[in-house]
Image (cartoon, rainbow, N blue to C red; front, top):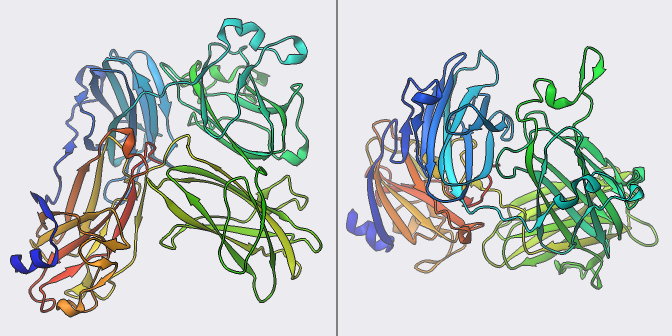
Length: 580
C-alpha cells in the first residue's frame, strides 16, 4: 500500500508524527499554581497554551523578548466551547498594567503591543467571577509597527485646538497606502486633532489601534469639516466612543473631495452621582486610563479613471474606474472583474445611473474559486436613496495576482426594471493589516470509511496568525490509522495531476477526489478514537502575510475501497497578522 500511495502522490514526505488524543507537538499545558505574578508559567513565542479557569481564577504567564517585537496575544476555544476571557498585559512585576482587552474576538480576547527587550507578564481571567472552562492562549511575534507620522507633540497644547482657535492639527497625507500615526493621550483634557485633505472622491479607512507602551483603553473619535464643525447628516455617523472592552475602532467611509478633521478626545457620557466625570475614573472604563494609541489611515482615490459600460459578460474594471450598467427583469445581476497583484484594500459602492436610476442594490464579491468573500446591501449614505445603495470595503489577503468577481444585483426595495446604475471602484495595493482566515470547504461527502466522511477542520476561532501555532484537527478517521496530511499552494491545478479536483475512482477509490496539490505530505497516526491534531508553527516573516495554503487528509482503510484510502474535505487558510 505504501508503494501505491507514493505512486499516486509523488510529493515530499517531510514528517512523521504520532498524534495525541490530548496534546499535539507545540501545545503546552498550563501548570497550576500560576495565580500570581511570582508563580507565572513561562511561555515562549510560537507555542499555544492549553489551560482552564475555575470561578474567580487568574492565570499568569511570563515571556521574555531578546529584541524589540510586536507581541500578539489572543485566547481561543478548546473542545468547541469558548469562555468569556479577559486578557491583560503587565510589566515584569505585575504591578503596572500596560493593556487590557476583553471582547476583540467575540467572547475571546486579543491584544498586540510593541515591546522592547525584557520580561513581561500576561494574565487571563474570566469576565465575571463565575466564568469557568477551558481556553487556549497563543503568543506570537511580528515586526515592530513603525509609525510613518508622529503626532504634533512639539506643539501639543496648540494641537488641542482646532484651526478656528489657532491650533495646528497634524496633517495626514492622502494617498493609496497606509499612514500610521504614533500618538498619546496623557490626561483627560488632551485632544488630538488631525487634518486630511482629499483631492478627489476617496474611500477612507480609519483604524484606531494599539500603540507603544501603555495604550489607552478609552477615547472618543469625531469626524469634522475643515473648520472643526459638524459634517452634514448625509455623511452618516461622524462620532462615537470606543468600545468599552476593546481599544479598537474601525471607521470606513467614502467621502467627496474636500478638507476634513479627525479629533481624538476623552470618552463621553460617564457620570458619578449624577455628575459628569472623566470616563477614565469610572469602572469599567478605567482599565488603562491614559497612554499611547496609533491611528492608521488609508485613503483610496476613486473617480480617477474612465467610465466603462457593461459588455454583457463579466467586464474588467480597474481601480479608479466607474462601471455603468443596466439591470432588467431578464438580467437582474451583472458581474464585473477586478484584478489585484497582491494584498489589497478594495472600496466598492453603487449609485443610480442616468434615466431610470436603480434605487436599491446588493454587492457581492467572489474569489477566483467562486467562493463568496463578502456581501453588502446598504451603507452608501452619500447616495440620494437613504443608504439603500450598497457600499463595501474588503481586505483581499491573497499573496499573488488574483481576479475577483464583483456582482451587482437589485435590492429588495427596487421598485422596477429596467434601471441603470454606476459602480465606483477604489483599489489600494496595501492594507492596514491582514486578517488571518480559515475556510473549511465541502467535498468528498460520499467518500466514507465505516459510513462517515473523514472531517478536516479546526476549532472555531483557531486562525493562522504569523508567528503562532496553528492547530487543525481530523475526526472520523479509522482508529489508529495512518494519515497523510497533504499541503499545497493551489486547489485548482497540480503540477503532477493537472487540473483539480482529480477523480480517484479510476484508481480504485470511487466517490473520492483529490482537491489540493500535494506538494508536501506529512505522515501521522490517528488516535484510537480516529482523531488527530496537527500543530503547525507558522513563520514570523512579514513576506508570508497573505500567503494562502490548501490542505487535505488521506486516511488508509483497506476495507473502504480497492485503493484502500479515503480523502477528507479540503481546507484553505490565509496567513495574517490579526486573529480576527
